[in-house]
Length: 201
Image (cartoon, rainbow, N blue to C red):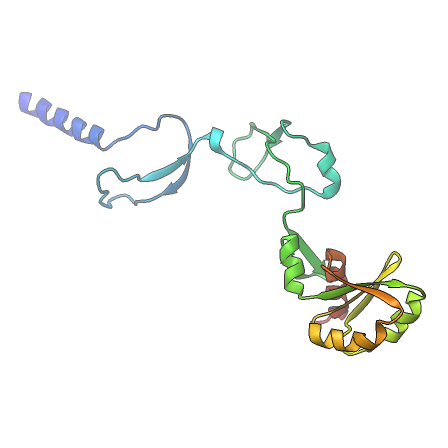
């Protein structure tokens, strides 16, 4: 009997040496070993995420931004989450993080505003002067000119081949003020739309 008790105590001790209790309730974020695998000494077997360390990033339409403020308490609902989760807004980005442009059911571009503009590869000039409508007509069909758009009292003239655009614009510069500018999202979206007007496959 004593031998059986000793064996039982030894087994309990062995199990206790292999059992670890988390210091607080937490979500299992990752597991590094599977049951039956050998775990070297001092190596973690799971990654735990306590509720206090959980951060949620979510996106809102621009018009809804004014309804939130830093420090405001919100109710969080998500798949496989507890039903009574409350979160506090700790940061609101001052600019749009990611964009997606969908045209006739097709995703044409997505990314940050900088990525979308950079990937378009547009070279854009802002043109000011008298009778811009006449200039707009003269620019139609000109080599290198892929887009001419009125923005208030200026024209934005754009293309993707800088050298071809500059050669074609050289004889048209007199009488107007030409300034090369960083294309905006409006320029990029119009360019994408013009290239994809045909919604066919």
